[in-house]
Image (cartoon, rainbow over all chains, first blue to last red; front, side, top):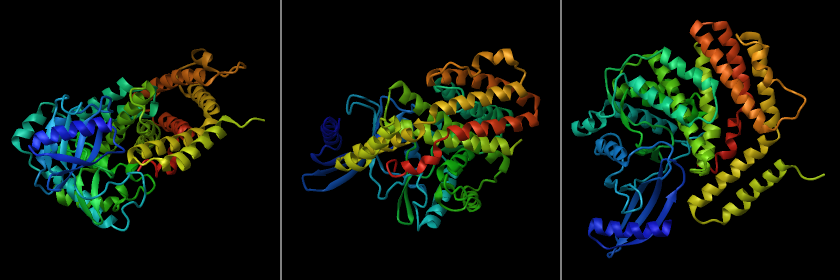
Length: 334
Length: 146
């Protein structure tokens, strides 16, 4: 695949830029189940190098999302306080590279595994302040009216029901077994809805440890916007705070700063007053949404549609953890 | 005596992680193979208990249903442990049926707001989850899954 892709890519990129390029390197990045991501280095005739990131749609991905969604979400945050890669191109045409794709400049920095404790040491505090503050900026950002209009087509109110219905449908379509803890969690969410937030924000959809780049003490980019949509900003906060992203040190969500401090930073940055009960709803929702994703992964693996080990891993480990999170929240509310 | 299946899996996982994975230059393929090694390691560690865990869970659900639910002995008779040996497939089928019965009963108690019974069912949930979970082996996956 890589050789064929290399040749297709060089042909496409040379035509796109109207310049001759040769390939220095093309490597697939491990992880992430919704896109195939490649790090590409090319150089022109004067030996000027360009570092690029290519995101290709997969035949079989956990959650079907359009390249256009991710591209527009990145577009909404170009030149803002939310660091995102510079976009180069997007195509929903399968003929050029064999699948729809998005191309952007590579940012400096590295992404960590969300399951490794102390991965950000010794920069947890600096990174934590930026991580939660950037999430507040996402919640606060006025979205360009054209982009807002496009995202609005899938938007229904109340936000909580729109999102819950969507993920429950995935669960019931993809489940390969009965899970009473999860079903009980779903019923709880429907019975105890949160207040509807007055502010409609762009929701990243997968804002968490592991989906940002950092270079020492600086967050250099927020990535993986393929699940972006309009909704309640507490959705992103609940997802980012989920204990799954700091399972071996639950006091420090995302293995960064303490929970209270994280929420304080987010509140200051987003300028949103927080209702604790609403946040708890969104945290339970995060675990249910997570279960939908992990169940979907297990289904892909079991059916043989995509036997990438990340799908088995997702069904086994995160699936276990989110189930336990659901149980913890339900028990605390009896 | 022959080596057990879980020992074969353990050794295969070690070979994959320590011997074959380092031979691969391509970072993506290397990570993917390393992940397979770790997942096989987990499979080996859980292999021995797979059948007895299902059996214990089924008994636990039956006991809870008989004491707490609207169901009677006749409703769940066919899922009771018998003298005939059952394979994992059959135990799993029975487990799914029992889980579905349990879920219906829990929904009923939730609607009635019966907190005492809900507390009791959460104890059962906790026990079921504890027996099945493999997230305590997360450490094994931290390297390959990075």
